[in-house]
Length: 577
Figure 1: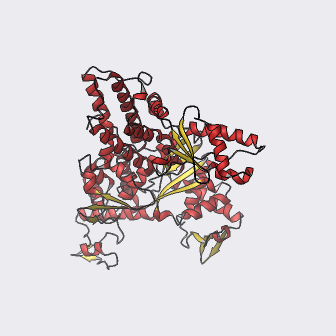
Figure 2: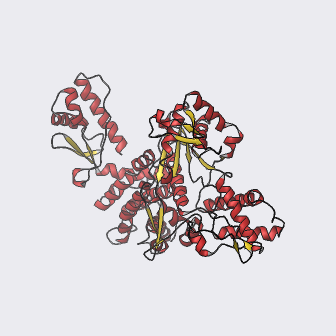
Figure 3: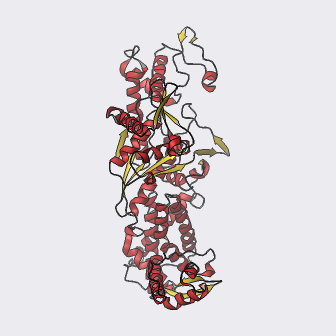
């Protein structure tokens, strides 16, 4: 609807400029939705921007545009001038009504566009190293990345989902040592550290308890999953691994089992990846050394205090950064630079990193380095999200990835289900903290739980269809009903909302903000559920066959938009609840 109106205004504008002798490119026609509905469906300040250009009073320009526009090919019932030259536009009811059939005919393609025009785009998200189960922070990132990828595909981008991980490095060594320590404890060969030592990282550890060495590393991973891995090794190998180093079989076994669990967790919430990229390959293929050499060739690498530094102040950043420590071990920054250069070398037109707030300080250095290595840094984007807190019974649940107190994605999904988990994780703006209300998420009342509220709105459309079948009333096709019978104000309001869906999808994709879809679905359900609740004024199936067909058409249009929207969020669209 909006797109058609923009075209009509564009034609009127072209005529106005031609008559004014202005052959320069016409300005873009921008339509806004007024905050107050009495001001119309759309508003434009186009005349205000043209005043200086063509040397006329903006109100006079607005009058000229309105006269040329007329009813915009039947789209408008009114075009009014307000203030110094604002144009308020009101869509004709029959134009809204015709939209119902358009939506039914479009089906699952409704809301699709060519905004991306086949541009090849990579979305990297989750990217958790295999050191333990996915935490709620990883869960938020997983849903955010997946919903963003779905949105971008909807508007025409060629999207590749990628998971980046590292199965080497210090974290993995600590993981292996943690598993071996629990393995020795299970065999009675080592003593577990006292609980107070585990609770306080600053507390000095005793090296021996009751004659047994305390093998557990002070910074080790403490979750129950570590002991489960150790018990599995005891069962399969008995004491055969006692002399094995933690950074050998223990690390390899833990990595494989944890990664297997991570993939199972992601599958349980409907997420899969096209590519898994291992950081280790950057070292094996010489990409790390190549990056250092290329940066050095541009005088952006220097040595100081035994370490190798990136001269990032030369790139306009606030400080220089170490890329190789004095120990010879690279910092996280160096492989990140190499990895992102490889992304562009692989042919992506644009790259989006979905990361937690703890990565925001690192990103500008990666971006600027990629720029000096020959790629357009503006095509490297960061979608940053804040952390997740979980509340239950009014109390905040403490979380830590190394202690045994953290809540995993698996635990939350088991409590509330995949659909509710996904909806709660995506319904807030990414850069805002997310308070996951466990009690609300577990509430089965569809009026209270926002995920169920939206899904129930969809299920109701099937309930109406089943009732129609029982009464021998056929569901209409896109062209087999008279939409003009949908004349109640609340019906027009519903159709207006349905008509706003394509623009919302494009906006959510362009701004990289999938939460707009969740907002929209709640608002649509907020119009539809009360409409259906009023079974007398809004009775769908009645003795008036024309009205029945028209309202069944509205049922199908609402179902279409709810189903497409739920699909963009990765939620099921149930037929019964």
